[in-house]
Length: 467
Image (tube, rainbow, N blue to C red; front, top):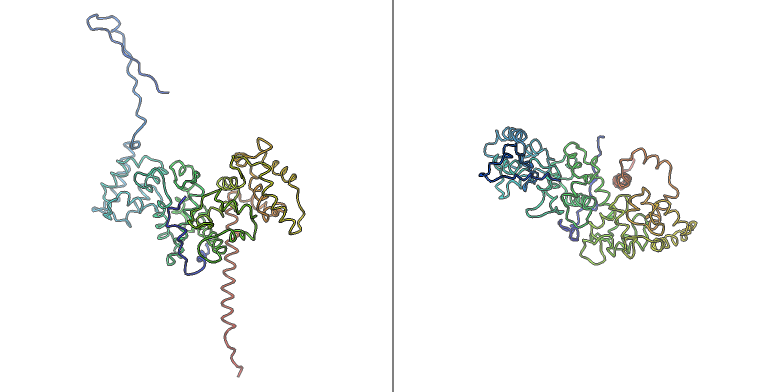
């Protein structure tokens, strides 16, 4: 699948190695009865009986959407007239935001996209009549919010949304959101932030993995709620779904650390270092075989930034459905839709070898297999399906046991304090907790570097003689 954004394989290197830290936050239809009539010449006495009336079925399908009810239409027209009363010639794009929020009840960051939809000829002005024709006469008014956003963002004649369709929303967000004001002078990282947000959206919502986001997928996801929250919250980091700058910072810094030559690509040797050499060679081979997902990179044996975003989201939250599907494809060696004990043993063999190398007490695979079966409780004991994994809360541990030694060891010696902490805030996902920890670590390192540089400047100054 080729990315429809500006292409992560042509990633421009920023002037500095990592993006700036985020500013610290302040806190069955009825049938018609057939009417039988007698010839008029017979004058049948039955004609004097009351004949049944035809049952009319109300129209339930409208090719261009259900038209608005009279009251709703009048209410909308009143609001439109009120806004346009001071702009007789029409609204420019910077004046149109009040229509987007007050009349359309949509997130303000959709305003430029909606404006261009109503003004396809780029006259740079939207009149009252043009808005009414699109929003009211076009029956956008009666659509649900997901359908409205879908129709505003999608290209004409296209039955899905592409990554590039979200770019105008991110451009407006970067230009106007107070939580991203500090980033406005650094165009390189504005682009990286926008791309990262869009990759995250497609990772979680585009479940088909085609790069073509359907209306049904948009409805089923939680993107719209996050977009609406953007207008209500000035701290961008509190919107942890998709838009958090701190989450972007963690992802990008992790990529930069692994990309040793900074060519904006990662190879096998780079990825094997991830998480302090946590992963096995066998699972890294499966990733680079592009089994779980086709790389967007056009360079043989190289992973692009977009590919890395999908990897890190899958690796750090193995309990999410996209992650379970990602790793299931990796472990399902023959691609027959089930994971057998032989396939699990294939991956665990390397784990066992690594444990022996660090003089860790070895665990027999037969014991591991029993533990996995107990955790998942599959329908059939001799194999595990994707549905079995999705039905268990312990599925993430299975994959960690098979190919992530550090997380396997942490699970075996898990801290009761961390377990209690997770229970106290169940709304946070594994990814949220990981990003929280990593951002704290990275920001501390940044502070230490700044202090060290400052100290070096002081100590490098020549000492003045005492007299």
